[in-house]
Image (tube, rainbow, N blue to C red):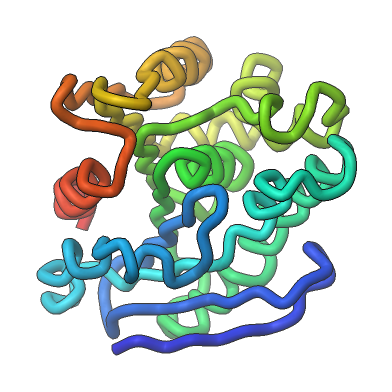
Length: 241
C-alpha cells in the first residue's frame, strides 16, 4: 500500500522524495508543513486518521519533501533565491509529481485534490490558483497565505506570481475562467497559535474574482497543531471523495 520514490529535479536542484499510500481512489496531494518531509504526515498520524478512506479505495494519498519550506526555515540564500525556489517547487509538483501521479493511477489528466496545513496550505492554494487545469479542489488548514515574513521583503516578481493573495486581483482570461469552476475550503481553528484572519483575507480576494470558496471556523478549542488537522482532513476528504 505504501510506495516511496526519489528522483533529482533540476527545478529545485535537489533530490525529492515522493511517497504514496493507497491503491485506488481520488488522488490527493498533502503538502508538508514548512520544515516537513514526504513522510511527515505518517509520523504525525494523519495517514492513520485517513485510514478508513484509504482502505475503502476512496482516496490515494501522495506527499513530497518540503524543499522550499526547508530553505525558508534555514534562511538559505537571499529573498530572491528563496522565492525562486518556491516557484521551482510549484513547477516540480506541476510538471513532475502530478504526471507521476497520473502514471501511478493509470489515469492521464485526472483531476488532483491538494491540501496541507500552515505553509502546506499556502502551497495547496497556490497550486489550485496557478494550475486549475489539473487541480480541482484545495483544502487549506490553518493556512499562512502570505510568505514575505519567511522569504524576505524583496522576493520580487517571482514571489508575486507564486502568491495567490498578490496575483489574483489582476488575474483574467482562461485561467480565471477555470478557477471559477474549482473550489477551495479555508479551514482554521481559533485557538492557540491560530490566525484565522489569513483565511478571511484570502477568501475575500478569491470571492471578488468569483472563485468559489468558503471559510470554516472550527472554534477556540482547535489549535494550530496536528490534532486539529487530523480532525479536519478526514472530514473534508470524505465530502470530496
